[in-house]
Figure 1 (cartoon, helix red, strand yellow):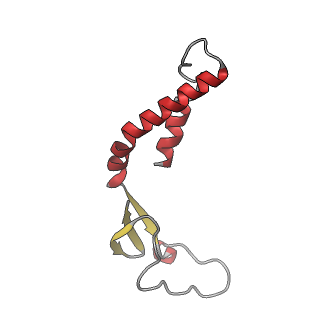
Figure 2 (figure 1 turned 30 degrees about the horizontal axis):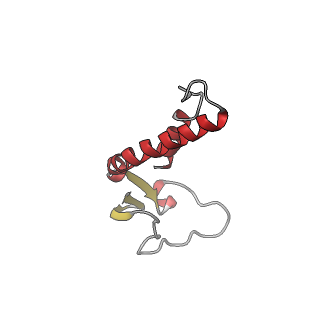
Length: 103
């Protein structure tokens, strides 16, 4: 969702694609683009959120299960049985050190 906001901000920045009104002062142009940004965001943010709702991210919970070797001389600690807390998502499936998280 943050990437959507960045793209929307850049696209609606005065002078990138269009400057509304064409011969307005800097303040008027900035205020006009602020209003356009707010309206476009309000009309599209739910659609973008729904489109990203099913997006899944793989989170590696146990790097040693992926063939990675621990750094340092200390022995690696066992991964907790419940898995780490994942902010912003709900665990949907686990297996061999990879946890599937959907947002």
